[in-house]
Image (cartoon, rainbow, N blue to C red; front, side, top):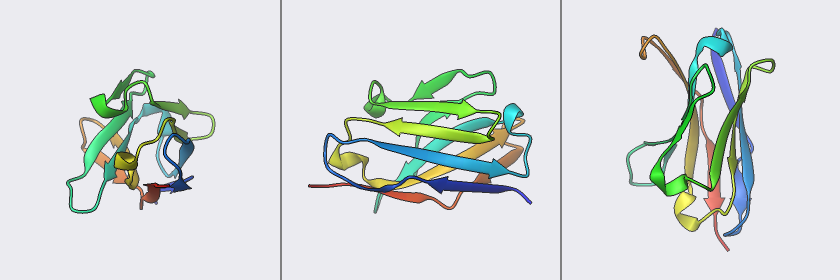
Length: 117
């Protein structure tokens, strides 16, 4: 059974930092491309950051220079370090695992991030 379990969300003040984690099981983690998505109330889910199996990363423009995605294949875990957080970063953040151009596509349950003073 495939499981993706996010953690690390919470309430943080503008300018603060959070580190999200996504622990996986039931997949060969090292061969999957991993991604973080987010969905704010009333908005569509958007891709935030991705990391390929070989470690290549990509980010949506709005988080470049502030967020860093990384992976630890030994721990089957992907991370999202979020710095200089802004109120517009408030959303539910979801972890995603993809292989074979999405033929295998798995999601976590999401973790809430709220940026507010």
